[in-house]
Image (cartoon, rainbow, N blue to C red; front, side, top):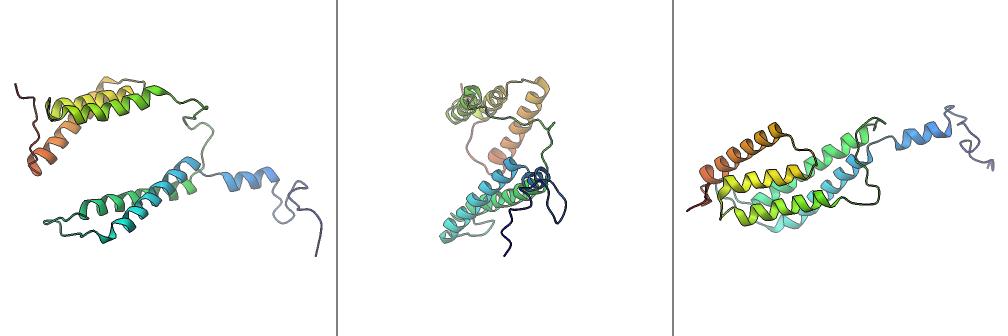
Length: 181
């Protein structure tokens, strides 16, 4: 058996002629953030499907306790597989705009998103679906640090219309659209 050191330690591969840096770049040139997010979504989706397999499914017209969770976990699994595949196939560019965490977390996004969810939850019965959705979108957009008026208006309108159509009119949930005086 040959006891000589690895040819990559000497500088280039004897088989393909690639340098150590080129081989390292080939092995590590995938989008780690996307691949990791896809793996996490896939694991959560798989665990949810496994854990909820004992729940009764029902039909689309007569949904049982396992119907919606199974749809959510299948969607989560599909998103995870798609993210994992695209993450492993893509090569992050140096000019890509990637937010790096430098050891310190910004408190504004965490606080704004948490406050948005709490405000929506407390406000939906008191001030109605429309005002709660507008508050949710406003606080969530403030978390980004850049407020764009047109983006805010379009997001508010689309979410208010979608939420009212699905939850109030289609599913007939007793949610007030406007506050009662």
